[in-house]
Length: 338
Image: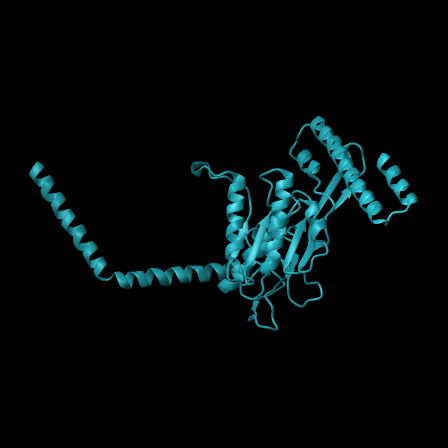
């Protein structure tokens, strides 16, 4: 029995060897078959996807001296989630970076808006539509035109690399460094809330310096931030536009933050959002009302102190330069005291 089992194993081993040898002799043919099936699978998938959604064939323009790099997406939808929504549940948005359209933004757009307002979704949506367009697929939009994108750079989300001893902030900076070193004016850059992994002043300063670097690179960029001082600094800078995810706020001036009601409109529009409405997110996360109320009180105190410092600075700068009259000075002091 032992001898028979050994003979059986030897015979099977030799059969397997001969089968693998024959397969290897025709490996080029098998590789071609696998490649054809893979390409066919992708094409069929893109075809079925295009049939399931309201899609359009994108138009690719060749960049030249007259045609600068641009992206123009009209009524764009997120390619990954649009199939899970029906009717008007998912709000379409226009994204126009560069170009000669009347409503075109500058190549770099600072995106603000409330927490959970749709900023990150808009950024991911733009990148995916560009990738699908350059794959040769139809895209979920009413129209789409763009010049080719050489690379898509993203700084999205927050995570550390614990096994490598790298903190969340270090990972943010490493990814940002790669963007600045390798992006060109044909790249698409998406940066989401850079600087949140460190102190507020450090984060704001680094974010500001990165925006300046991206402006010089002239790459198409969506830069979302909750640093509203950053928006003030770049409001009048050439090649920088402001955009925000719109929302409707009721009861904003109430002393009790629980009375504040925010309706997300998920619509990308021009200009800056004045606040991030973080307490609304805290309430949606079921943080205790006492904690939210105390946080709101503290936020008003910090905001009042910042206004005082800013006003004092303006007053004394104006006084030293002779721009303020006495009545203006007195009015400023009364406003601060109030």
